[in-house]
Length: 511
Image (cartoon, rainbow, N blue to C red; front, side, top):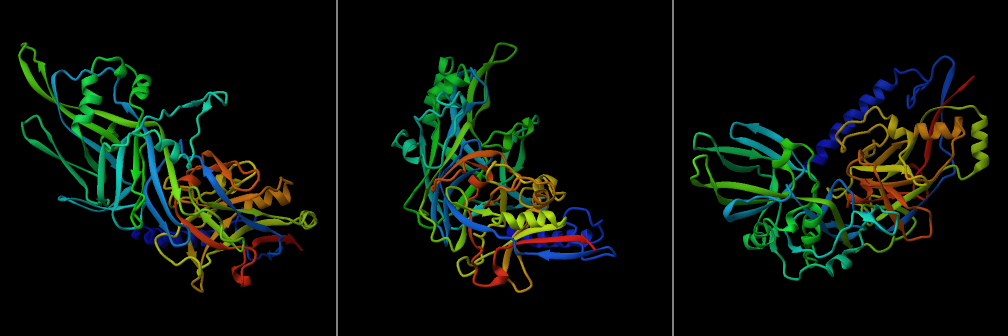
């Protein structure tokens, strides 16, 4: 995607600025990259004994996420993944009054795309879509679901119910075989959406909004399901409605080999003024009402259904096992992650602790195995590192001054983006200065670290994960579940020393 190239350009500028500024900071500031002064010498230690290996994710939590995948995701290393969605539906308001002689004119499904404006003029705006992967049309169908998604788990002290990526068969056994709608040869459009609304002068106002997936749904289905149920108990409360209309299932045609995958946000917006831009199903209808003089007049109106609270992704993937342990295989969703075990030699760690080092910077540089991963849009721009033992972020994440609201460009200091070195080799640099400083100088516990791909480094809420091997890995940050991208990195057994995974510790010591 073009947006990735733009982001990489600005990332390099940002890193350069960070490096330039850090040279002028006091030596004791974390990550300051000091090269020397009157009392201290800058030293590099890169002989820490570390271990790095892969773990295949058998299933990962896909409920309570901030984004939802739909479509076909093809990867040159990991093969094809089909992403389907099961979602509940909720009423805009309970016990609605649609008026008399109601006629449903149209029903429109809307999913906003992630997009940004590249040009604005009096004639409208030009957009570029983000989080669209691959190319080529896809076919998908929309089914009514009879599977009831619970919000709490009665078998786990009524904690929030967790749903997983591998529950496709279970869900599809409970959907109506005849789809509500079949969509063929679908590709997303970056064109802005233009609609018209009546104004007080009797004319029409032109409304321009950001790009969206918009589909006309069958009127008869929603006439029977919603409009004709006015005044009944099924529309009286959200709980009644969720039990009556249990949800919709969006199913991608599994026979499609090449096509697009989309990251969508089906979660309802909490901002009232964003109602037009959130995912919804809008019912446009006419009915008769009485004016103040008692005369019957025809009134045009609309009623919305939104999605949730429970929305679940399920994945059907060709990636079944890790090819080898020679490389580090990172694949989002129901994929795989790398485990990094630092300071395997406890005597070495004790010796370092006794040396009274002041850690200026510590980093791990992961080089892409370019014989396995060709450069292209499928390659993730970001990878993430976290404390596997506790399922938590590192201190470096919390302390990163480069944090912004944009999850694609945030925290470049701690989680360096995909970059290129002076020889043209692609790599990621993850700075873990605070983490290493606390182990060496504060006797903090050394824990295993997990590395995975991400599209949004700001999404770090905890989710459940199960790996193939009998290992205590049961929590991961939620962005691990959302991304479907993958890469292959060199580990500790890289064929060349320059691409070997090492822990680089830059430190100073009094003369």
